Amino acid sequence: MENILCDVIIDNEQKQYEYGTTYYDIAKDYQKNYENDIVLVKIDGRLQELHKTLKSDDISTKAREISFITTGDAPGSLAYRRSATHLMLKAAHDIDSNIEGVSVLFSLSKGYFCKIKGMPNPDKEFIKNIENRMKELVAQDLPFVKKSVNTDEAIALFNARKMYDKEHLFKYRRVSKVNIYSLDKYEDYYYGYMVPSTGYLKYFELIPYADGFVIQLPTAANPKKLPSFVPQNKLFEVLEDSKNWGEKLGLETVADLNDAIVAGKISDLILVQEAIQEKRIGEIAQMIAEQPEKKLVMIAGPSSSGKTTFSHRLSIQLRACGLNPHPIAVDDYFIDREKCPKDANGKYDFECLAAVNVELFNKDMTALLAGETVELPTYNFKTGKSEYRGNKLALGKDDILVIEGIHCLNDALSHSLPKANKFKIYISALTQLNIDEHNRIPSTDGRLIRRMVRDARTRGISAKNTIDMWNSVRRGEENNIFPYQEEADVMFNSALIYELAVLKQFAEPALFGIDRSEPEYEEAKRLLKFLDYFVGISTENIPNNSILKEFIGGSYFNV
Image (cartoon, rainbow, N blue to C red; front, side, top):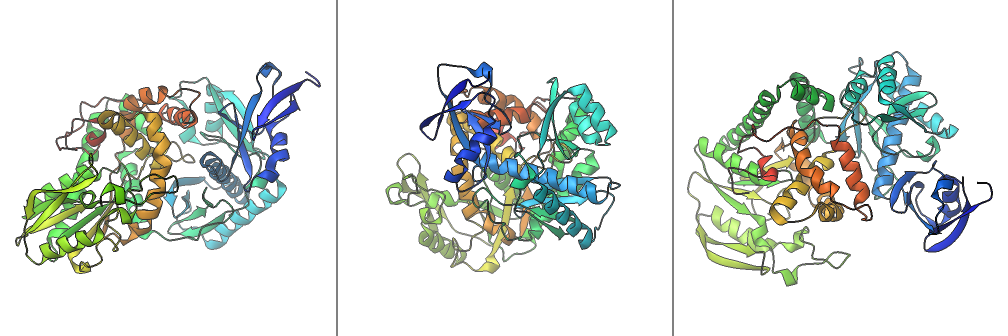
């Protein structure tokens, strides 16, 4: 409709734009008001890409509400990382079209660890050539072109391109259409939105590492500066081990898992995965038992890693090694609630170290190591105060403390305790399964879904509220846990290769309960789309001591 104007509200200001105007053009008018690049837009609360337009069928007496998403927002940062991945893959193809491809495997440092297929040890010059080609493509400011094709057409397309993992994935797609992104005729599939063009992708670096490379990318917290690359050798070793087990089991992608479910092999798969975890827990217990000076087993990990179940299972294995473990929760050393520091939003910050009575913790643990009898506190979460209920403890020759808390890897918590007496364990649910070779499953998504299911079951907290507080939880992890993970003596991966197919049936109803008008709707929509890739399975064959039972219920342990 030529020259017909649409009323819009942007930054609390009412404006008019012609129908057919792209949101990209509208964003240009407002970019000066934003510190970071505008890469996406929300229309009446619904996320859209900037190439979309004000359409004539949107005519309404009500003004459209437009808000912009920048690279400093989580959805914008994800779009940046997705687009940079496509840029890297295109550049690698341009440098050598005969390579079998590049696999994007898992997060490392602040980027993604990648391997070039058929090139087990790529030389630095080849990786630098890819980076230089990426910069050339950025300078050309080429558009990411999106098209929607039917699923059968997509399957044929990726078969022809020898992207068999994507062909395999679409076999299980219920929807009739698939979105394909093209960059200068290089086509690929991504689950999620992209930035408008390569010109937005100013910050990246390709760093040779191990038998591949890391594409280092900016974060939402600082989108205009690349973080320094920090080798995480222990984390890398755990992730590589998980990936190798996936390869041995023939389960590298979601489609591989779906195949196993459809073929009726899931019961055996569950037992094998649980056996692998139990074997590793037994190995950790044996390591501790062989070091009699280790009296303090310090366990830390991010939210929903399964720390409680892991602690119980480790304690059983320690008993099998002839030791007598005693659980200690650092949470029982919280200071009284009214004395707890508050965050920038005026809420109690239970994640910070200052929320813990560090001096009392050190005094009690030092006394126990000295052979004294100590009465341990219990924190009453209802009253917000510490109480003494006659819980006394003295350590004998074979006694050992199993201490769990988010600060356990930080020596500031246990500053007066001898390092020789500490054995540190970092636990996290490090998802080893990817959607396909270029679409990885973030471990944070797996943990969020775990927590959502557990919160609804045990605390009556809605999926909406879990999503709402997740960013705060993640900030606490970034400040208090991740900086210390490489200081652990061992790392344990609590993720189970089959778990998302189980969690799906619990998470989907909770996510569908989030109304379109709620600010958490877009995240719920993204997670629902993600879960749709999985064929669901029942819980009947999951052992009662499984870490997964901590979240879905029915655990043998009191968790």
